[in-house]
Length: 186
Image (cartoon, rainbow, N blue to C red; front, top):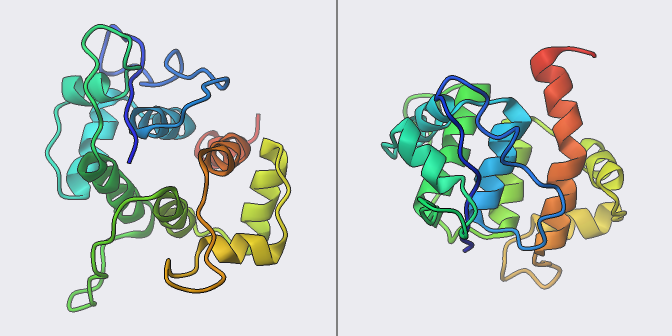
């Protein structure tokens, strides 16, 4: 899917992404998505590694840090789809709990922006109205039909690919909502 990185942090117990996030990033890649999500939840590098492990991929805090760097930074490591998907799956488990025993496991599909959006919707228990508000707060307006098109199967005639700008605007718009949930009202 994507690729990139995020700036150095001195210690693994500090919030991982506060200094790593520049909202004006124009190219949204896996490293940028991971960086933005860590910032959103105020996760440390150790937290990112722990959540990724919940999703089935082992990652050390220093490896998490390297995958959150921008590609032009020294020590940057490309965050591949398997790591980002494991982080998103781990986020669902951390926020919603594990699958009930015997529950069917959905088939793996390529990690696209649509899948990232879908996994965040599940993890955060968002309704259409929540997502539309987040997009609007992020600076983009979609109709309910346009939003539902993002969640349709790729072979459905009304499916719409989620571009980087839509995902970026969603992440920008939902971040304060998540931070209020995590830290309480300011």
